[in-house]
Length: 274
Image (tube, rainbow, N blue to C red):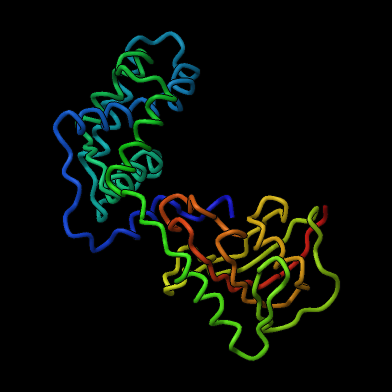
């Protein structure tokens, strides 16, 4: 699928157990904080200007308040919980980036945020440039996995055909009916409501729903769309998708290696109106 649940978190999970974590230089640390502050200022500045249109002290007081929120951070403090309710987006984003390995600190981030809110060019990044820098830095921390071999992925697909009830379509899609549904099948113009678990050939779970999600068939990778078009509401299928019908030679966002066969177990809950 084009959109992945928690792609960045999954990317971090894929590299758990790496021998040595990436060690950023001081210049990289400064640049990551400045880039992150630039992207946040892009979203915060319009609301700040709207709320306090003629207050020259607004930026400083705003960042001072955010600094106080970082200072009092404590899961057991009711006052912090109240502040967190107002600033949860910012604090949670910072924590998420730190958990992923980005060298962001409240002090450096807030210093850059103060500059970026006062002057959108002060950090030396444009919003687009800042976003590109953060993506580039993430690629340094989490290098793309090596391409999987054609032989290993084809062997995984072929092995499924040795089991009773598993079928291969002319396209190369292999599927297994676990539970057959009832009614009509969706068409390419439909949206569908699903539960699914996606795995690699080695059994690694790269994506899993915790609650029903909606997708348009037209927006999914070919093998997933084709498999759904066979199903009926209430049914559960297992789809074995070769690389050519999945994410191909590029893989997906650090969670699916290049040339990976993928294994989806899918429950079609409902066909939604076109």
